[in-house]
Amino acid sequence: MAADKVKIPMLASGGFGDGRGLVAALSLGAEGVNMGTRFCATKEAPIHENVKAKYVENDERGTNLIFRKFHNTARVGKNEVSDEVVRLSANPDAVFEDIRHLVAGAAGREVLESGDLSKGIFWAGMVQGLIHDIPTCQELIDRIIADAEAIVKNRFGAMLA
Image 1: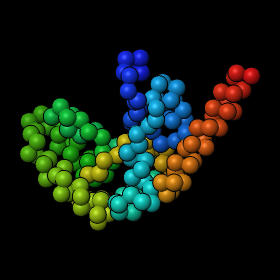
Image 2 (image 1 turned 180 degrees about the vertical axis):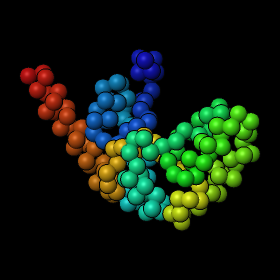
Image 3 (image 1 turned 120 degrees about the horizontal axis):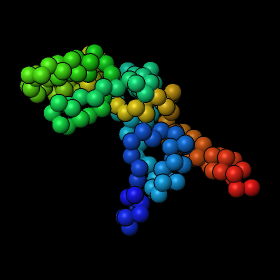
Image 4 (image 1 turned 60 degrees about the horizontal axis):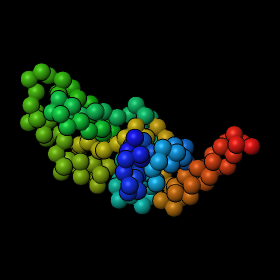
């Protein structure tokens, strides 16, 4: 619907990590895709290798939704800390102060810098299910474009022939 209404280029965001997603987004009217979690799992990403490895290890179910109780839902990687945030938040009397120490920005920064996943939360989308390696950004982009071109040429081309 947005593609029918806006006159500026749009980027699709959320869950993109391969050529199939790019083709789908383009088909729906986007000019491209925004990839957050997928770029975190690249060689150039300035985060600890343990976090990158967790993106590869997790599948699409390897996330937790937090802050729902506080009407500010966020999706983060599943680990001991995010599991604890979910557990504490389930208490009907829970307030943000009950989880603040677990979700503080300083704790998340420590995870990204030290790689100690027990220190805090790290942002992650369901796209983790599509992450199977840690390529360079160039390798990732080249692969996504090649896969998208193959889908358009082979699958869609065959449908039009």
